[in-house]
Length: 264
Image 1 (cartoon, rainbow, N blue to C red):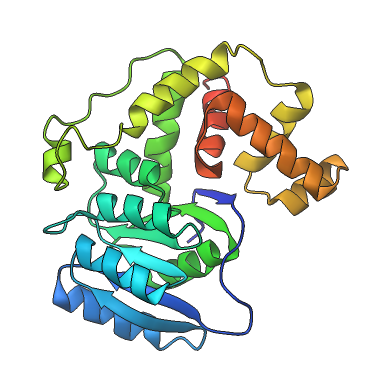
Image 2: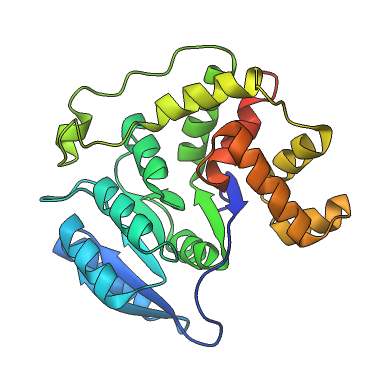
């Protein structure tokens, strides 16, 4: 199955060795099934299995995996909080969310926390494997349903609509107090969508072109070849675009590009 949205970020992992994978799920059967299914691949090594978010943080710090497959609704510490902590303390580690939940607030919070991919547990085995390999290569993936949710939210915000209200108990349900919870992606999306419509310093024609290529899933190297610039120059352009649009990562840039497009 072809994912609905693919973007690129700097690659991680070391060539010539298996991808080191940490699996996080509070349900033993699912955790073990994933370990058995993914661990038989010759280029994947399951280095750990965590039972909840706190265990995921502890094992990630100790094992330094390349990729973490993360459930969201777990006891003690949620997957969103664990994702935020792991990506903040271990920037080279990629997080693939694999969950049964497609609630808007969870989707946006997980992406905001730093997840590079978001899949539902009904995804095919080959899609899960390809997504894990893709994030190690430096790509970001969203399953088609999740991509549609994110795109629709940014399109709506780009049209001037108010952000959807997050569930009042969302922070509590994630195992973190409201005061400690990070702002939901809807807020930053609303701000970014407003900013993209009336930037203090609007995007130049070249920046707008590069932003569109980012949303098409091109890496910096491919963008450089397309617009006839050095790869280092493209990196500078991307950094400048992120500053102007107040984006945290390339995934947010990709959906912001959609918000800037006219509604069809």
